[in-house]
Length: 448
Image (tube, rainbow, N blue to C red; front, side, top):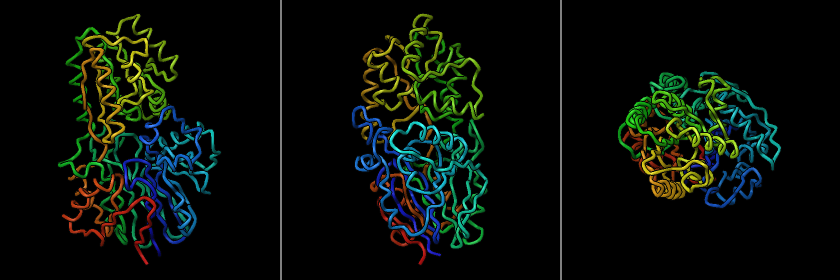
């Protein structure tokens, strides 16, 4: 059987992930993501109102026109998890394919919300929920399987396409968390089984984000205890404390809510994405928040909440807000600019339970945000976080488990893929032989 991989997006940058795998006449597309930095660099861009071709020209979504060169029919579109760099282009591109969107339940719910907010295209693809550990027949000779992984968002999976030539494992994005705060540990036992059954692993497509960082990525439990320690250290402060984290990081939001109550403050979630992700997770039963937890996304509702906090006393509340990357329209950025009723004062604490995404636009916006907060007298608590991506030891463990015949590095710029290439070479692989570096828009043939 002919098996080939189209590296559509995310092979020259972090963002707009998209990969197609063809096995015979059956094609599966993994991820359709957005490169948010390409959007944020423009003022007041509303992607919901934009045409896909304009977003492709901006470099914001994958250029899937290479799919015209791929034989066969697309049988499924499979987003691996709910981050925008993996689902943010579905509402712009999925309608081009007569195929269902298949993913884990939380991801499907986020995709559904994104499709509902789309105003340019009508997206009528069927939405199919599949839990980790389940399989689905793709055509006559291939099968799709979801393996449970751990990442910085709940309900993440690594999909595996089983073909007569061996398995193709799409390995974006994960860390090896054996003690997650929410959900099950990474299923390393199943990865080891896949590496040793039938024809083994024909190809492994891997996320190289932290391939240059030594050691292993800590568990979310480590970030949780770090966060608890910081909040306990300032529990006697009688002024304002504000926290920010990834809105999609439900485990971290859960910890912030619990620790706010431990130090005698009422938590409140503020910002549209904070309301969306936490509200969805609670509705689907992934997390059990207090019944009286306030979640407000609309600006008027947020400002009313800020006024109530100022009236009743900042020392009684912990606002958990959007804006950890310095996004121009996020809550924390508006607070830094003095555009909300919440008054930051000398000595107030701002907790960044997130790390800046290492990309120039994000780094610049985050720097500006922090400077604005400091100018108002805020004290910054930074980097209370663990990554959602593997470091070197995790990569070695995955290669040992899967023993792939071919490796396709992804999810980084070409410059930063070198760390992963060297790691693979230390395991006996060779660039140009069984390590396949690729650019966006290329096609890699694995079998003849």
